Image 1 (tube, rainbow, N blue to C red):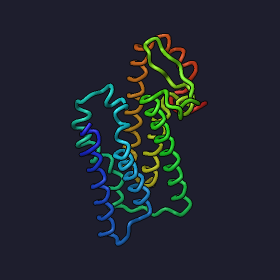
Image 2: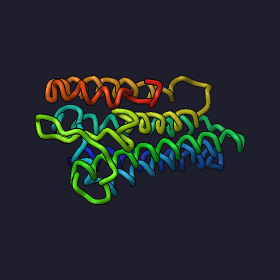
Image 3: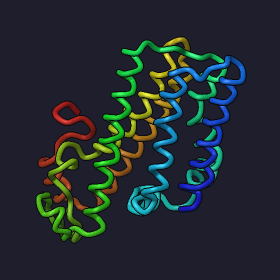
Image 4: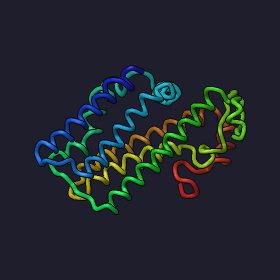
Length: 229
């Protein structure tokens, strides 16, 4: 749990701020593209720390456990690779028009809301499914005793939080422009990570819930994008 939140997340913030200062030192200005990258990323980090109790109900903690991913991955990979966009912009500033900046910012805000609201709803239901504030949500009870949401955010898609998370990262990549594919490595890597995590989660749930999982998938047929996929 410490590795999941502390060194990598805080190191990511420190590096982002350092790259913004580097850009200002070199060019005398912090470009709007830099702000479009570091503000959402710092918000993501602050949000993670503010809602750290909700991390306890994520797949990282409940299923994966402490291993290579939560040791090397969170300590070294997260701060060094997740700050790639800010590092690029510190040497190659991109200046967006007001329209393009607004579009990127809108994508970031919208996808962050999907990510945060869906995760908060899932955590609240897992923590106390009998909470009166959640009485409007529909669910099925499996033979294993678990309750699976089939309405609200989780009635839209089985991994709607992954969709918001990935699009949030994509917005930060778009802020760097299209002069290099390097800054889109994060988006490509994160897509592979989420697809692989989805595969593992779907396999685990099929094994655990058996026929109840088939019933659940019939009620919530979409994986990531409602009415599309």
